[in-house]
Image 1 (spheres, helix red, strand yellow):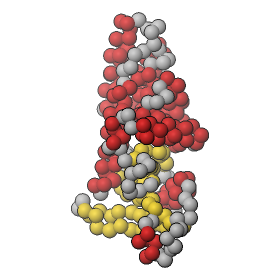
Image 2 (tube, rainbow, N blue to C red):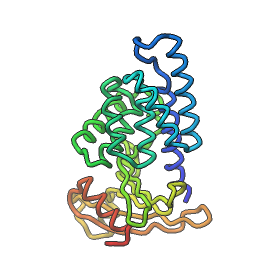
Image 3 (cartoon, rainbow, N blue to C red):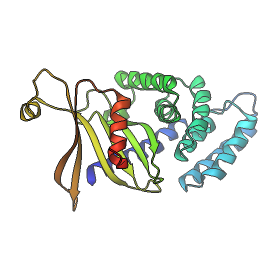
Image 4 (tube, one colour):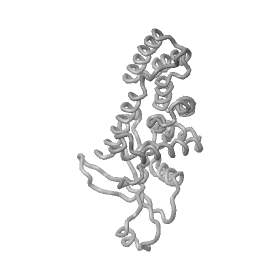
Length: 258
C-alpha cells in the first residue's frame, strides 16, 4: 500500500524534523552558563534515547532538566511529543499547555498539541491548536508546509489494541478531506486506509444525486504488489458531514462494528 505508507513515513519525518528546530533552545537565564551546557548535553542524551524508542528513560532526563528549569522549551516539547508516542495524551496535553505559553506560534508544538488535545477529549483546546496551525499554514513562512499534505488530528484506540490515526488534509490540497489509517500493533505499518472525499459531478450523476447536493464518499484503495487494483466504496453520506460524525463512521468500518 504505497500511498498510505508514504503518509505514515511523512508523519514520522515531520515528528523528527520539527522537534529538531525546538530541540535545545536557550534555557532560563537563572541557570548558569556552565549548567546550561550540562543540561544541553543531558537533553541531547534524552533525544538519543527517544531515537532508540527508550521513552521512559528519556522522560526521566527531561523531568530532571525541567526540575531545574521549568521553562526549558526543548524538554517541554520533547516530553509532550514523547507522551504522544506513548499514547498518553492527557499527560502530553499538559506539557503542550506549558510549551505553547512560551512558543504560541511553533508549528510542531501546535501540530502535536492538536493531536494530544483531540485525543484526550479537550475539544476547545484542540480547535485552538487547529486554528493556529492553519493560520501558520496560510502564512506560508515555513517551507515545510509546501510539501505537507495533511496533519494528524487524533488517535483512537480499538479493543484489539490497534490504533486508528486520523489525518486531515490541509485546505486547498486535492484528494481526501479526512483519512483514517488502521495501524498494526506497535504502530510500525499501516494495515488499512480509508478516506472521506466529496463526490464530484460525475460521481453524483452515476449515483443519481442532484449536482447541487452535497455528497460524501468513504472509499478504500486496495493495493496488490504495490499497485492500485481496486477502489471500494464503503459508505456514502448525503448532506453535511461533521468531523466527529465522519470519524465515528470510519471508526466503525475499521473496527468491524458498522
